[in-house]
Image: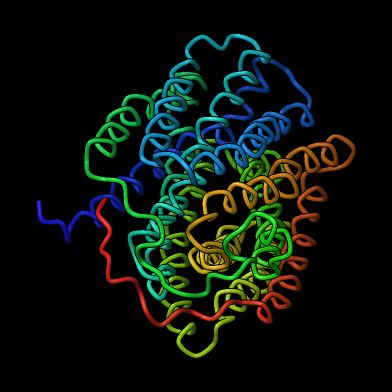
Length: 411
């Protein structure tokens, strides 16, 4: 295989792993009513399954990021994928709520090793001015994987029990992880960028006072709060509040997610890179506008006419996915190669601590006392806060270097 094709191969394999990762992650929301029917937890306890996943996910992230800036990222990614694939198969022996909780925490640790290292790895394969599009391609796995998680969960769960959908990702995860490990070499850190090596961008101490990193991270955290809460509870909301059968709710929400995810993520990556040629704050501004424009669709989905609920969800999801590539590119570009994995580890800790580690639990607690509709209202506050923070972040976005290292990177 020619060396020039290897970055594309690495990107394809990492995207495939991300795809399987998100199928596994979104099967649980699809089968939550079935889990509740077997174990009879409160909505608060059911929401805590997602919270526990993200607590272990985010707490392991900073240490993994520190290690990844010093050791082979390819090896760590492979080991992490094997861990979460194995934990997925352990669903076969989860016959009480505690076992399900433990299974979910192990998956969280395994997924963290992959999710935080892959963007840093990809950044060393492609130059800064292309990262919005490249990361958009990588993150297309989110809507496709999430959609299949809902669809597979709803279809298999209602027919063969809620455990059966979790088996779908186990063996493919092992195979793709091994293909990635044996597919090529580790890329050189910083091979695709030059200049801008300030203290704020190259040291952990500087990271603590890097406004470009922190505005992008806090804006992403509020976006994650909203998206995580909606994702965890939407199939249950459609069944409970709108009277839509669970299999149908998962199917239509899954179709909406994949269509709007493809459209929003693809348009966002292209538009972000195009806008970046004129304004260094483009990634931040586009993400802020996407948060604001998602609010009307989400509001109508929660409180409007049930006949138009899926149209409203499609509008909201398009704008929620519009920020995916640009906002992740803003995080990657806010720091330089020497601390990139560490920075992404800190980013993951913060966005999940303030985001989807808490929102499913909060929504469930409000639902126990009132309704899921009222619980969903907190996600609108998160979207508004995200927009405000990201608009502020446009002032701190680093300039894009116009030269890249002549040294090529292999993957």
